Amino acid sequence: MVSATGTWSQPFIPDYPGQENFQGTQLHSAHYMNADPFKGKKVIVVGGGNSGAQILAEVSQVAETIWVTKTPPQFLSDDVDGRVLFLRATERLKAQQEGKVIDQPVGGLGDIVMIDSVKEARQRGVLHSRPPFKSFTTDSIIWPDGSKEQVDAVIWCTGFKASLDHLRTLGVIEPDNLIEVKDGRSVKMPNLWLVGYGEWTGMASATIIGVSRTARTTVEEIVAYLHEIDTKNYLEK
Image (cartoon, rainbow, N blue to C red; front, side, top):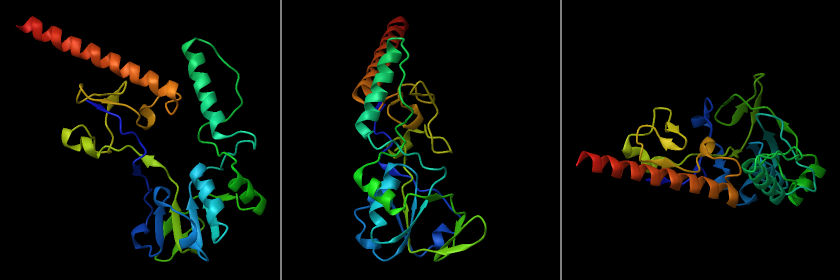
């Protein structure tokens, strides 16, 4: 069995003390449609990636916003777009396969691409973030210094976690909600391969060349496994 449902179908929202008592709106970026529901409100946008920056740029046009990030957000230069990042990742992978080292500018797939709306937000001075708050009350967040900030909504731009529910009945999911794997293969169930999950993905896995390499490797391992089973069954006859 190959599970290749990836990491993009199960939104992740971190746990905060008092979160269940907060009576305002909480929304994951996966379910964000537009800024209209937040007009005239005070909104916290949590997350320092592209989705956080882009949603902040849009919502800040109609609402008072506060941007919360774990670390200071990293912005790419204005002349670099997402296509350039994927091209760099593909070039790195190809060079690695050929045993070469190439010199490339600093910049990862997690850095913020300066699309037009984000540039406009920069001009308005809203691309400034604060470190995370520590808890919720019914209508506010509490900052680490103990001060309260009344807010109407929180938009969680905090990514996704692996979609594993379809594997739960197999008994391979650990108490921490992960699967123990070695080289992309379940330790508990050796005929189960997992492709495209978080840290289990390889370099440039979001590119054609990257996913092609992963797919080829997985197929080769499955063929070898089936050959091993056939040989074992033959010897036992």
